[in-house]
Length: 530
Length: 76
View (tube, rainbow over the protein chains, first blue to last red):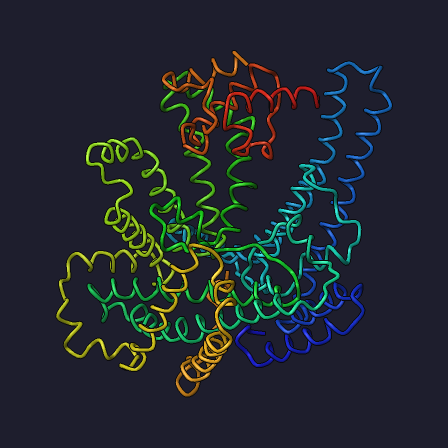
């Protein structure tokens, strides 16, 4: 069920009404039922995957919780008689048992994800190697279809179980409540990847009908639809024309494609997240924010702190830090410092962790070389930027430009284009084609083709470009105005007439200028395929 | 506390670790240093610094690092 479908609007409307008329203690159960109905729309057979994740995580959580309790009670009772070493050894013994359970849960769930998402990709690559070596073996591929939101709910649920293991919070005792945390429908399609301790504060209610929350939620949903239907789905047409015809659209059109795709992806992903967070807000539930005006970032590391925040923090907390400070990495660091000196020695563990994290981020986005290369290029740029910091600092000191408006604008522009360059790997059919297209930017000077009628062949008319320009300016204005606090709060303080004109203006623009009708097809959200 | 400062000084001899309270916020200690620092602290104080304790509040000053070590030792 697409967020942009009429089924979804009907589904959400019925749910909102029911949610506020039933007894409040039943609200979370209604949400659970609704989430499973939503999931079943994608295919009843896929319920087995989400159920397997829920049940395995629930029992692992209970088991780990029980072991922690046993450990604490034993230490408490025998506090006087045990030495520090004995206490440490006992704690380690209990932790080891917990670790086995955690490993079981992680292997099972990431195993399901890995097999479904990466089996065919791996097999195809192995077969290609066999072909190259002239070995006559062909491993068959299997017809897996990716269950809805599996990358998102697996990460969210594994974050929960790791936190339970780390004793950040106690495991959820009620399996149905945990099931709701895993399957809460607004987050299923493309996140955000919520943390249990944040979401549980509001997920299970009870929630009174608070008109401000409901109205704010509806506004955010509208804003999301505006971005998705008026901007993203319209630009998709031009982007597709460019990237699906690489022999025809080269040079300046590759740059144009990058620019259009940057706006399309932003409108698509932030629009989808606005709808998800808005739906939750109408239900009185607060989900994690996923963006913080990312295109205003001044460096690539800052960009990754502000774009898809919940995925970035997931990788930091559950992959980057554990690898960086694991015993084996600390030992490696020590050895390297002895062998190569402090400067190189201290870098090696961080380099390894960064490369692992970005390789994983790449394949998380999809089983394709495009994403792997994209991830590794991100790692490369991040490490180079990190190494260049002293150089930048010297430059800033010497020329005293740091903080000036023009220099900040230069930094923002540089980050935007650098990220757009890398992101192009999402679009073309394979890595060689993408690099060939990168090459044409420098080798094919065809700026005149912007004015010889070719531009019109991208599939959009003048009216589309006018709508896009105005819509992008509006998005830019809202982004800039949000720097000093919530735009909706500001709007709510405006006179009634201004507010209602804004709401109706937005609704009318979505209805009239939304990219649907003949020749248009409201498309899947880009991130729902990950 | 002196030992913590000594370890920090070995990373950046020119920083006033006795008084600085923004080691992470001002990026005086970067992600490269953190790994070395954790490795040195674990060896020196015989504690295991768990991942969930690696947050800016615990590493912003020598005092915060010392408090963290003390707390972890007591927990053990």
